[in-house]
Image (cartoon, rainbow, N blue to C red; front, side):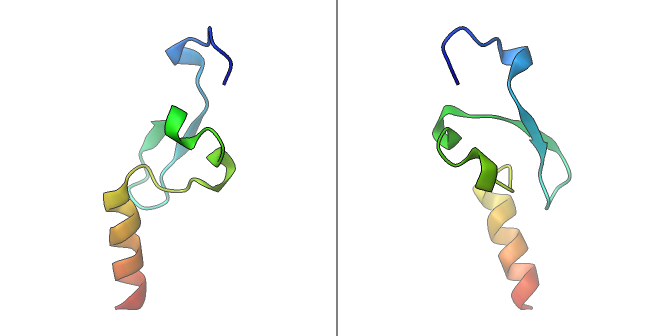
Amino acid sequence: MPNGIRKQNLPTKVCIQCKRPFTWRKKWERCWDEVRYCSERCRRTRTTEGSA
């Protein structure tokens, strides 16, 4: 993301676990296409349910 992008204009996705929208973070700059969960908690919950 180039500097000067307003927060309202950041890309968003919907978490596949909790179905809530979340926005782009600087932390995900290089891997935004692979991000599927809004948080570590959702990611952990999803893997636990899948193995049970």
